[in-house]
Length: 231
Image (cartoon, rainbow, N blue to C red; front, side, top):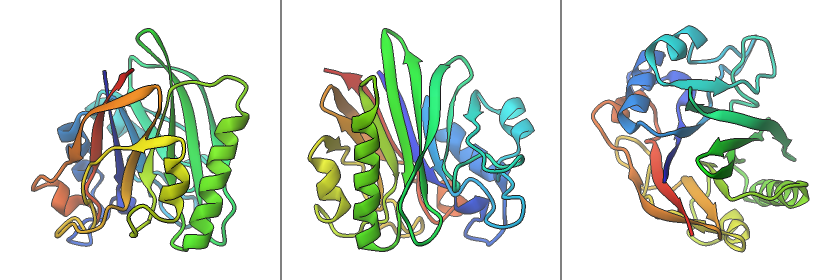
């Protein structure tokens, strides 16, 4: 059993329009997942500096970041990154290039978990339905072309409002969705934009949306989580 979570942290800017990385870390500690996919983890312009300073993660959490940074001070690949427990052995990691009109990307990591390997993919897909489907196709094609196949969890902000259509239908051919519930907008969640998906050799034991007083203020998305086990 492993707990995974996905969270679009909106570059650390909360409902009060203030950038507050400590508040984001408070929410992550509340969720307390073993693997966390973050979206919008870097600032958008200039040096694309990571929103969560490395020293803050190191000194005040049980996680370590997988550094996919495009620049020296970045955490993520087009804002996507992962946090894993400090005790977790990261076997391999890479970025996945996505077709897009605006900067978009996905990240992947192979983690040593108990008796095997867990592959995790984090993503933030386009606002355009056409490009989301192309991006979903690119991710699935990348996974299919990997030399070694492993049980896989995919998660992130898919930006898909329509239930069971578009990129959701594409992913559903090979993956099962966790029924986490709506996570956007944080103050009054009605959209299931954030998703967790698992391959057929995994099962979702429990899942949900983390709606605390802090999480409703920290970003415009609420974090989602799932407990994952093997079949």
